[in-house]
Length: 73
Image 1 (cartoon, helix red, strand yellow):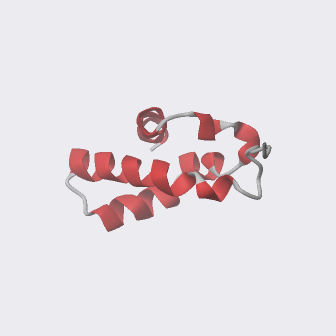
Image 2 (cartoon, helix red, strand yellow):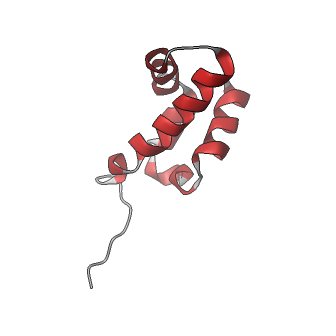
């Protein structure tokens, strides 16, 4: 069996799914386009923390990450 650990080298594979779900919620809640929602999320402190494997934020689901984003925004 292959050992499938999350590392800084493969973390990027998990992020698009989480970010896209966050963007849908953000766009819906604030009347933004998906593109604008994605841009704001990718420029946020929440995303900077999420892409740092050491924070372990990748364990969180999109709803929890979205709430964190709103609190930091």
